[in-house]
Image (cartoon, rainbow, N blue to C red; front, side, top):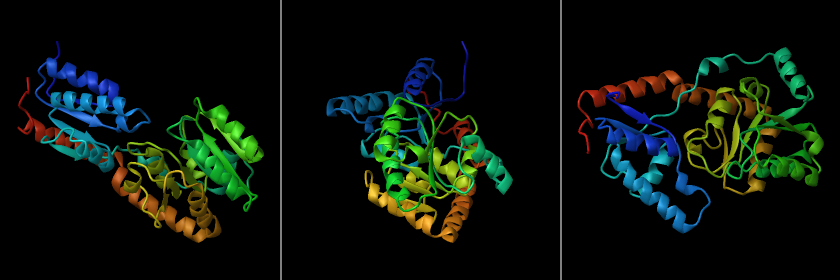
Length: 306
């Protein structure tokens, strides 16, 4: 019933349905908003090949691909999905204004008190759903190595999910359960970042890890596994450290470098903040999308493929 000039779809399942529906409705301009690579999840070769075939088939319903990160777009190019159609990157925007004020000591104490964290603790934070893909068990293993040399260290895990109980058991097995806080779901994570010293990211799959952007905006350096999108956020040995997936020793070593040098930690945090403000301000995203939409309305990609 509605006649739209542009349909911009997002996420895997809803995007698939949305692209087909818009194509059947003869919408003249359809954008495939690409947020991640579903066929990179752990799966059999047969299932992976099926997902790639499905993407190749349905991407033809769209007129342009817009990805949240270059790594994600490169994965589609390598698998020849959407070859010959316009493709570009538009970073997801964040309201950066909420991060511009640093917490004073009183505010930081209040946040830590609410979470049950000692005032003089050095906090390593990991925020995300407890899942196989987010792989918090690597963060816990690295923390256990670090805590042996840093008794005031505290690990703050924010989130919920199916792997949470297994992670709690791992903390007990490693003898660090008294130094790990499972905070559960927190609606507003800005104060959590601002009250932390180091952000640790051990995801095995991402499109563009927004938690690393949020940490950067809070002036908190990130130590992370190599994962899609991470190099678009973390500049290795300048705003944090990026190590090979599964290398717990390298993960702990990167964090230890920041723990040993408070000045470096502060410098990395400020560099991260400057980079994130420049790239991920939501105003930049709005500007780039407006340019894209106007370009399409003015004639680019307007031919319906029915």
